[in-house]
Length: 297
Ligand SMILES: NC(=O)c1ccc[n+]([C@@H]2O[C@H](COP(=O)([O-])OP(=O)(O)OC[C@H]3O[C@@H](n4cnc5c(N)ncnc54)[C@H](OP(=O)(O)O)[C@@H]3O)[C@@H](O)[C@H]2O)c1
Image 1 (tube, protein in one colour):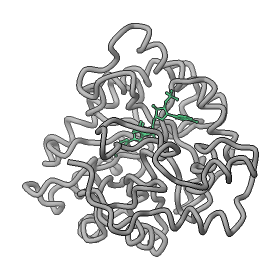
Image 2: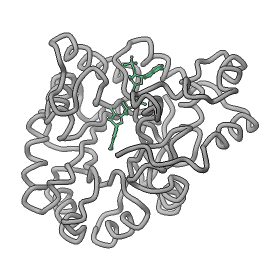
Image 3: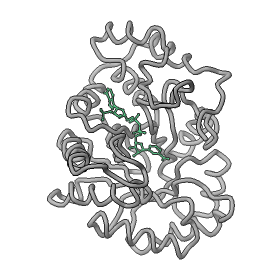
Image 4: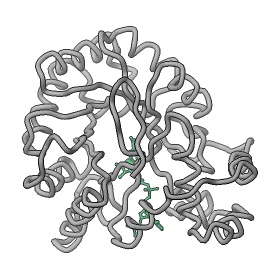
């Protein structure tokens, strides 16, 4: 495993996510087998050194946190780094204090390593949200605070109202998605801000994205990057491994992926053991469609 260290926090460059394609965001796993597959994926990832786990109160309306709680119950808590998120409709002070207690209970732990504001809410000012987030550090319920889907302006506003530094902004980032979605704005600007402020940019949805034509989630590798197969052959890697390597090779970037396939989790860990040549990095850098339309609602 490779690591990056910022603000004295050393994190593996890969984080295992828990919003899986096997189940519906609101309802959680469809079958007991799906539930077991989610649980097994977390355990396998941890065994392979992916000790950073990403979840949110919203995922399966708490079921993701429960599954993680079960997956980690026999593992030394201090060896793990657990991130969860408070939903954008819970950003008033009372709701934040209630949300963290429920998340901790579902996860079966007495602290979170990192707690993120899942998305900003125009109706609740960050001047209320961020001091409440900081109170959770003061009370020992969380160690670090961060944000998700925030623009540079929102990060600045959040930092203005926080007595502790933001550790990360978790945003969608992959070869074809660079902040053209409605949330967050241009990834290049977010990344620059993160670099200037010693913050991680946690790239979510690194491998899949919504196909504009079919509206279904599709492998980025299959979305028309002409030379990707050729580059993959050159390094004897898969296209997904090339993409993960390209992301993790960027300063300040760590990646949150999801997989319930044993082979794909292993492949993703094995995406880190080589270095892309500059010409290939530049090729991937230039794949972003400059005139891309927003594709997320
Ligand atoms: N902050 C936010 O608003 C936000 C939004 C979305 C996601 N997230 C976080 O980011 C995590 C990752 O996002 P995501 O799941 O949407 O995107 P993702 O990791 O890009 O896509 C997951 C899909 O990729 C497939 N996959 C994984 N590794 C693969 C490989 N090596 N080869 C082929 N296919 C592979 C998985 O299928 P298999 O299971 O078959 O491997 C799964 O269907 C989520 O779990 C969540 O924790 C955060």
